[in-house]
Image 1 (spheres, rainbow, N blue to C red):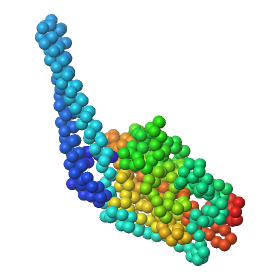
Image 2: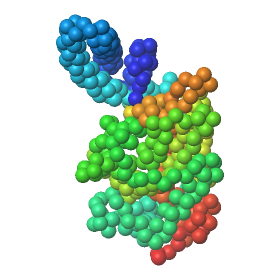
Image 3: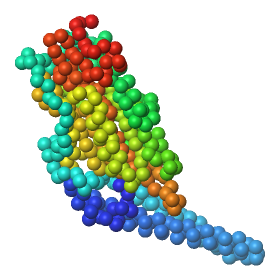
Image 4: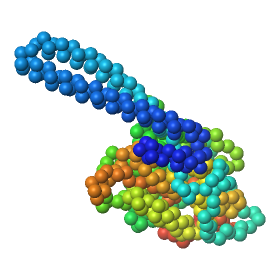
Length: 426
């Protein structure tokens, strides 16, 4: 959530940055400023009236002490009238605050000045590429055919158990999932991230804290009986671990990692892009999150980008890094880098990670703060990234490493998987 104090001082800049994100309702900025002015005036009027009541009440006590009961009674009637007026003003104040809070939630985060202009993924900037694209034989198969060939995932039974987009991993397919999850967690913890295992459902306040609500409720599975939401990513519960806390400045950065299943409705998804593991409703992902000092957040963002890049290099996958344009960024992000791996059999790039800096947008909602050297309370910055999402990593590993003898796995997975590759049908 944006801070109204910043909007007051930099209204024109706010409008310019929102335009980069292709935000349509720029007039909302002026509406919020007017609501803010009305709210402050109403607060002042309410506080002034409360002060008058307090003064009159004190005077009543003095009059009673002097024995002037008639004047004291007259004052009591005045106080009763003032209290009725105060009740009306408080009700108006509550209504103004509710209206203001509802409106400011509609403003997305401001994009960083380095965010390129653009409206669609085609306008994203390629920062760099790495790894070599494999030369596959003419009869190379896409991962959904390889999955059948090696009996790794049962999509049909998963659909029968739950619905389309809920894969059932089995045998070596399940073992490969476990190997990747353990490898990713070990890689992250060796880099100083503390591992968490969070709940897979969150309440509204938690989803609100990271910006999923009110922006993405249509993409989350909602447990209506209890008001809980199935998590779309570990970012949601783990970033909220420090909500409503004042952390020590010396404890920053706070580095956290977690593996969770993730649940996304992916409403409106259809076509060739959703075949196999390209897009599913339940998938496994390992996440990294950092809470950092504001002055260091963009240095930390680059460190996190390099962290994910090294992971893809160790997996021996061809990849590219994109800086997202304003129109392709999430509601809460100030700057996002996407990672894509090249799927050789499909001849297309598949997104496997996003690494983002949210600055104070999330921490303002969650009230995660620290005290600076002067003792003033400040908001920390939050960042997160996928390290990594498994479905498309698995798709690329299967497709890019297929041979006549089986599927070879990168060296870093040999010990975790217990073999150098996937051979035959189990």
